[in-house]
Length: 403
Image (cartoon, rainbow, N blue to C red):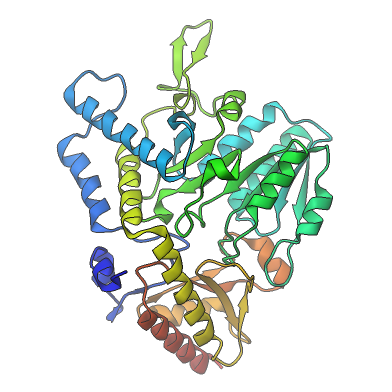
């Protein structure tokens, strides 16, 4: 990988913040967008901005073709059996809520759903709401101090009452890569369906969804060099047929009368209204871009960055890393004893360094460690060891100022 050539693809990396060159280490919140993807968005609005499906005029047909071509790119990238199993959404949260709301129709009191202890709020709150509607019981797969799921307890929690299991592929707060193959296989043995939140994983790992045999998998484009406001829910066709429509409106209908409405076939059954057309097309372009670099090369380089950053940060007196799992992606959450994470984040921002501070929409993790939050540095394939060095210098300066 020619990192300097790659960095030139990202216009934002050329700017300064507070008079300093930008060091962007908040990739777990959103990745940056290369010029190649920006150009695709601009091209859509300049040349063929039109609504999709059913339009007979040229612009509409061009937009429809580009949008459906993006769906096929997503199908190929994730090795999905049928393009109709690719549901465009506004992002991972939308996909999770679609499944949670639809599951109301087949859950009842006495049923159980499992979530892991290291979930993002978007993979906790919808299931709590589902349990409130149906009387089902929410149970939690515990984690240990290293930030790994206690798999023995997971297997003990599974029973013939388990209906649904929800887990992230990678923890946004800790970087832990969860053993989703084992989670899926064990859940299926008791007849439970599994939804995997892939928002944090998909930028680093290229999952084979047929090989995983997962029932649902959700991602967001903006974590993968794409635009905000668009994502995908993958669902096995048999499950998508069971779930009722999530929203009513145009596009998701077959026929409407005042007496009765019939619904469109997949995937349109779940795609009511005008979608983020340029976003969907750009998502396909973002996958093209990342695949041109290669996910194996990305993973290898990001592992090098993670190891280097871990070693260098641990040279700072009083610094503690949360999340030391054996299998991680390029996320480091840390604190310095006696200093609030917000104060560190504020000082390093003055040096042009963008990190995230707080609970990272994962308050149960912070409660587990009995801390208010962490500083989180998250790396992508366009970051460099020199930027890691600047982070270490910035955190060291913050420590010396605040203690």
